[in-house]
Amino acid sequence: MKKLIALMLSAMLMLMSFSAVAAEKLVVGTNAEFPPFEYIGDDGTIQGFDADLIAAIMGKIGQEFEMNNMEFGSLVFALQNGQLDMVIAGMTISEERKQYVIFSDPYFEATQKILVQEGSATKAAQDITADMTIGVQEGTTGDMYATDNLPAKVERYNKALDAVLDLKNGRLDAVMVDAAPSEYLAKNVGGVVVLEENLSEEQYGIAMKKEDTQLQEKVNVALKELVESGEYDALYAKYFSVIESEAK
Ligand code: GLN
Image (cartoon, rainbow, N blue to C red; front, side, top):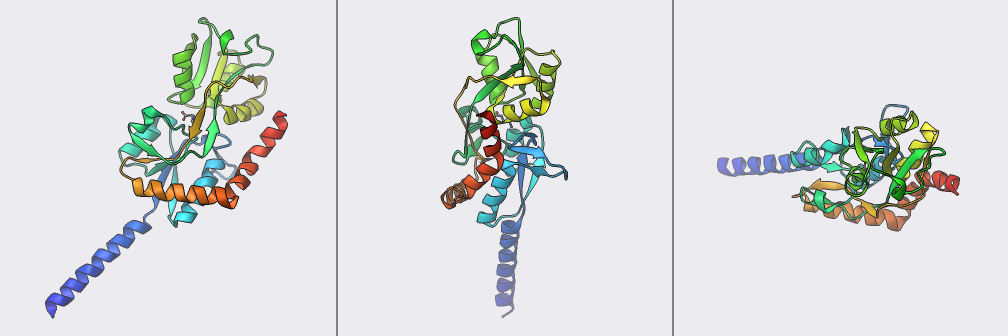
């Protein structure tokens, strides 16, 4: 009898610790310097398309989470060393990153854009020369594109905003950033414009630890449901309809 009670007790304890694991908050990393995908709102919290999307996905999965704001260049490493469980940061799915992490299905199409001062003679990537300096956010696909494909000297910043401010005050000749954030930054900073040319074809994905294939599956199912229910479109309209109608 004693044995049976001990057995039941240990079974109960095991069950309790299992449910404790399931209820544990997941830590989602981002870099809240990338409007409209992620930025710090007036109330000091992380807001934006990605913040809303991850909240909707976690709602569907029934998983509690908290956001952790860090430098973009640290996100993949923080996933690898267990500091983070997921990353949503307008992060492009790339072969290089896939060596270290796994991605959800794509949730957004993106491209790289060049920003210049208003009235600049630079109208396209081909006008960029070796004596110019182009600003990028360190560790981004814009950094990689500029480094690999443009003759200009590449100046790396922690924040794309700081690069755009340096472009405005003449310390840079151009800046390379993803399309949607470049429109936001140009509008907020003023005096700079986004060139029309699209320089890459990229897709954003939510990154997870290599071993978290079950979580990846749940995220993909939730994403699909959000698209099918129209919730994804509502979110898109919330953050992008304004920019698009202004660009026309
Ligand atoms: N999409 C780019 C990348 O993945 C930039 C992302 C960002 O700056 N948040 O590198």
